[in-house]
Image (cartoon, rainbow, N blue to C red):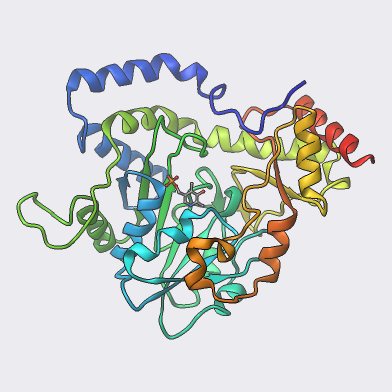
Length: 362
Ligand SMILES: *Cc1c(COP(=O)(O)O)cnc(C)c1O
């Protein structure tokens, strides 16, 4: 039995008639940008998260840039960001004029900690980007205690929570991506910024629309970055199912444990107090590349995501210097993602574990 790395279509298949109907409604209404669907989705996501404001934008990368600018980040500032994450977490910083400063991560969770961030702080640090890596919330309350604004990059963590608060409600601001393969994915690109702060929300709203409040006066150089009505209408159908899907992802992780995967690989560790929404199920092994090849051979989805961490990426070299991040390098070398989706069953987990056993000759 083949087990794919992810499956974005089966979980939403039962919702297809409703999605079709909502798409037809948008076409009938003939409003495509910043209309009623976007306003309703922003309200519904804010209510779900338990925050006052959601400002939707064109994608999760723009969301980070705009959120940082809303915080007042600009030229001469530094923003601390982990190196073990998707490229966009750091790529979004230089467009503000600020410099990314890379920090290391915890070996067990793969997330930043107050200690790893503290090591990267300087008098120029203006903000911290904390990534909820692979759907596991970063310890944001401990980071906020450092006294600097924290932007929670929750692109991978829709549906997760930490000590009863939703991922996306933990930072001064949080950002989401609705890229199709994310936990809450639309049918194209989309993103959002969430915050409890009225002034930050207003700044983000102005920035996403060309730096204008009223389409008459343009008060700053902004962006053309909006979620469109069709994507918002689709996301409104999906959002009520997010918690079930997150629970399905946690159940899939439990299937792997019950099937004995921990005897073969180092399994991901949840942050203390967290209910992760495993976007990716990322384990570790000394011979990760050989294992990926052997699993692929057996039709089991497996791949490395961040084999070259950000501080070693060519485009980010100007900000990395000869920085040494030992834990990041170790995780980059040894990680591999295994199949994960909200409907992954025990027999599929058994199949994956059997294939890992065969691959390792165990
Ligand atoms: C996907 C992702 C982003 C960027 O989102 P896009 O919508 O693809 O621009 C940012 N940060 C992380 C951690 C991501 O996984």
